[in-house]
Length: 209
Ligand SMILES: Cc1cc2nc3c(=O)[nH]c(=O)nc-3n(C[C@H](O)[C@H](O)[C@H](O)COP(=O)(O)O)c2cc1C
Image (cartoon, rainbow, N blue to C red; front, side, top):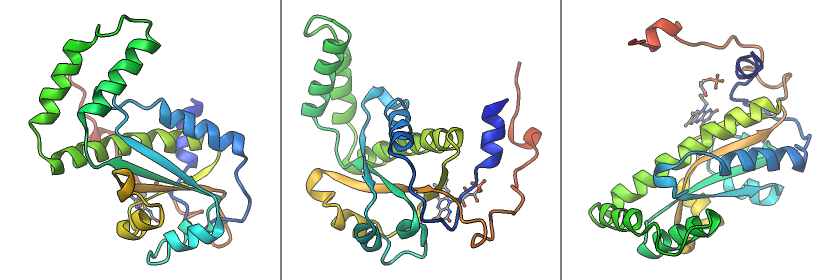
């Protein structure tokens, strides 16, 4: 199966060449992100794509992950700080429009969302939004592998630096996780030839039929 072969091929690259990933491939990865599942379908995060050496240098200034500045494209997954009633209403209206439904058809669902998000606090909302961003990260990793684009998921970054450089706070967002894209530099990357380590599958998976 090609998918499994491609997932065996991928690894979290530590060093990148200066070869740029074609925009068409980046766009496919971004479309895969947009097609990711999300809780209640609300897509409670935004993705910033940075391919600019000066900005990447600023974003990675206080991180040990050199991939931030050496990669071709850096994806910043920025989760919502809040889930507002206005956003829910606009999203429901968009859903009705895209599905050709009369306005108000989804009012039951909309009211349920208002009740749910009205009952949880700001921290819970931010954590919930971050979880959705991680699902998109997983989708992006698979899409990149399918396109034979190397990728590194990165949590080792200074969130306040990234939030400030990209002005995320003003946008009601906070950086949760980032993803470097590019092409592995096998000569400089000690991990490139290192065997992938995984648990025996039976230890991880329990089938209950
Ligand atoms: C959420 C997340 C955060 C990670 N953060 C980093 C990181 O900051 N730097 C890094 O080099 N690798 C990072 N990794 C890569 C993991 O170390 C790597 O996925 C793991 O060791 C399994 O190896 P593989 O992905 O190469 O198969 C991260 C992975 C995930 C999923």
